[in-house]
Length: 292
Picture 1 (tube, rainbow, N blue to C red):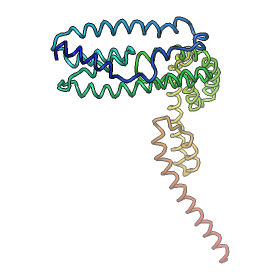
Picture 2 (picture 1 turned 60 degrees about the vertical axis):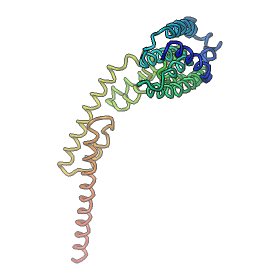
Picture 3 (picture 1 turned 180 degrees about the vertical axis):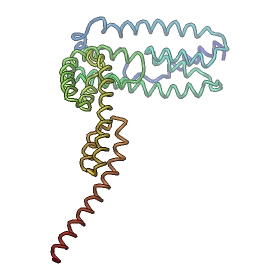
Picture 4 (picture 1 turned 90 degrees about the vertical axis):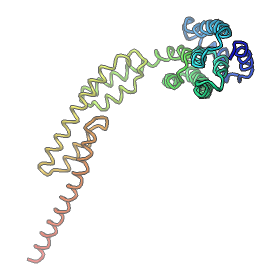
């Protein structure tokens, strides 16, 4: 493809691109957010949009002056970079400019479909995150932000919401942490771990909990092995009910759990057989008494 043909195709494709579901201008933080978040963070989107405009202008200008042998791989890579930067229309136009006889054509077609889908999802996630922030649903803010597709420009726009939610969640995180310590002191590591998982990792408290998580998981496993051994001990004296009680206390989150479930099935059958034998023995005694 000559540079004149490429230039004409880019112009044609740019005109044919669909409008964005939500433009980056429309997605700028509202006055409500500006009042609650640092101006530096709010300015990230504006500065980024301006720099992207300059970048895409320079990129397209350079592209129109490349040699006729400019490869489809090069075009697709530039399109990816522009897409991540937020230049949706330009990225689509660049990807569409790859000729059908290029080895990269099928890859570019698949990329365009994925980019369109992910862009719409990201726009919807942005709206959901903004709404959750306005309503003070701090956990939902983090969850919606986590579900946003991996598009740099949209993820950066989530930053003010996430940073605004973290201080609110930190208060709750510290309260949960105190409960975690209390349960751990009682050697109830299963419930302690369940509470740890409720503490968002994005909070200062959550960020420091990884060592405790590992510690409690090890202690939970040690306790599981202890309970399993106690079950073995009870089974040896044919106290299958007692053995089953120990097995029921083993957490499903431990590697020991599957082994315990095998023993649950075994000891349940043995307990049923034991009860059957005991019933027959009782009936035999009653019959013997009646015949005396």
